[in-house]
Image (cartoon, rainbow, N blue to C red; front, side):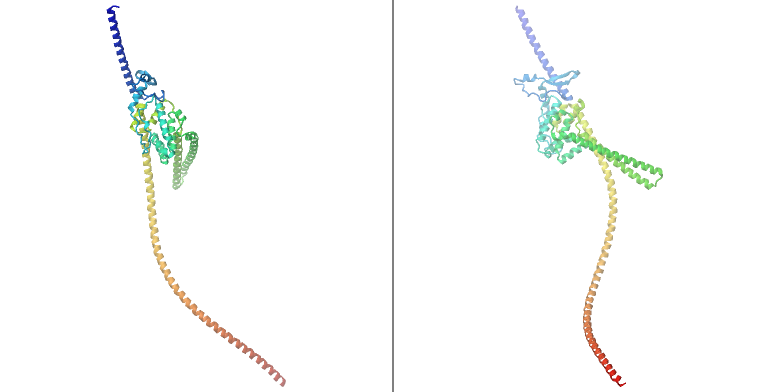
Length: 472
């Protein structure tokens, strides 16, 4: 080969090397641009709902020998990019870099119930990367399950489970139930409610190992009991409505028949009372139905509902900024904002219902207070009247007591006189007895004397008879 050919060969080799270098730099630039665009899309839309491993390979430093193999690992990661062209896989390094912005794990949320409610739960937040929202859900469920199960007893689990559950409430009834369980220290039931929340997003996750296995196994039986109670409430409400309808027909009949106004008014009051009772019983039946709905483990119907439930569950586990930032990176800004907006609407509805209930309670209180105030005034007047009568009776009692004392004094004098008279009478009786005895003795002597006289007289008569009879 001539010298010119050799020179041209060298020039071509140098040009090929230059073009290769430029192509490599262009590929690296395109990769960086694609990665930046993908991170932007992920931030808006969130990581995929499912797919990919539950745990990513351990991160390898860029200076390590195994970095090339680690960076070339493909993680299933389907994301729709601009123009409808999807990304099917990513490097684990991209996910590590993406979640590095989530920061480090904090000390854990204090929780709405106060104190160290979520001590040890700091690992909820942090830069741990995940390839899907379901992987994040599994990670969080594992943390919650471990934290709750290491607490000894329901009372010890109350603060922990209550802090994670309280903000999940989607109605005022659910929030009140949660507060009641927290106040009662029923941590086992609160943990079971967490199982229900996770089941409504990922049924297989909870079925594989619930936090509260015993309550989960008895759930169907408890729901059947609630349905039986609801049926009783429905029957009672139907019977009450039937009675109310009959009472209203009686009112209409009384008006048609020309019954006295007092009788019609009495029937109207009775009908209104029965209608109120019917409405109360119907409200109880509806409350039972809502309770069954809240306690039933409904599976998600489709992917959008799964995304919505998952975002709601994760967002309201912990109000701290570190966790909120991570959730936003997992579910995407759009879903995150929508979830917060929906919950704000729910909270507004709760506040409105509480305010309406407060106004209703205030109205009932005002009516009851006015009624009780009238009764109090009436009873006070009665009490005052009774007090005046009692005062008059006390004066009369004092007078009577004085008269009694006077009579007792007089009686005592009479008793003294009576005793004196009795003594005098006893003396007189004693004297009379002695006189009677003496008189009796005299009478005996007189009797004996008379007998002697009668005897002498008889003898005299006999002698006279004998004497004078002979003379004849």
